[in-house]
Length: 263
Image 1 (cartoon, rainbow, N blue to C red):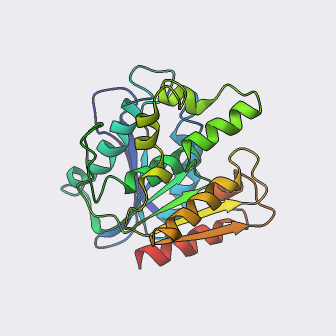
Image 2 (image 1 turned 30 degrees about the vertical axis):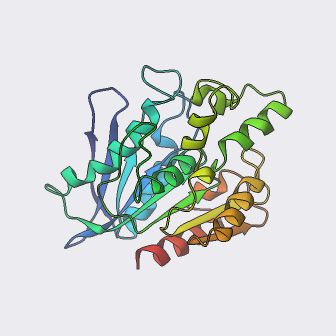
């Protein structure tokens, strides 16, 4: 199936508040996959990283909404702007539905690395609202979320960076260390928002040196303990970036997981 069209559309007034909508060459309304790219929330990494994923999914009959968002290093990036953008970009689909053949009863969010963090965090914006922090709820139904090597535990990732003597991208995102902003970390960390009561699929390579697989394992076991709807796939001989390479052996696991959620 060929890609019929793609178009850049803005969901806000800031330069990074935009997305790329791709539509398949198909008749009728299409299921939608929203993608969030990684890059540890840094401004130097953009949505082009995950474009091959969107191109492949569109060829398979999905409409894709590849989201850009404000990142650390640009005005409004980090706490709280990045999180507002994640919510606003998803809710913008209700506007796109007016002009494009989108089936909003079949929407899945896929995120890689830092984008996996945002995808899992967005699941917590569906069934409840924490009045003590930033507001914002998703206004469209989501069939499920797929985290590809997602940073599912912000404090644990910060600890790993500290142990390795790395300038922590998590600390830069959150504006400080966990001990400085414990409430902020609890609100923004997906593992602390469990249970979310929508299907979640975690896919992680056992050879990942960028985001250790132990984060997904810890998230999975806590979710299972809370009787949440979660599945975990640990792929052998798979590194951090093979998960977003449509030519890799790992890609079929992503496609199988997506089809399971949508259909």
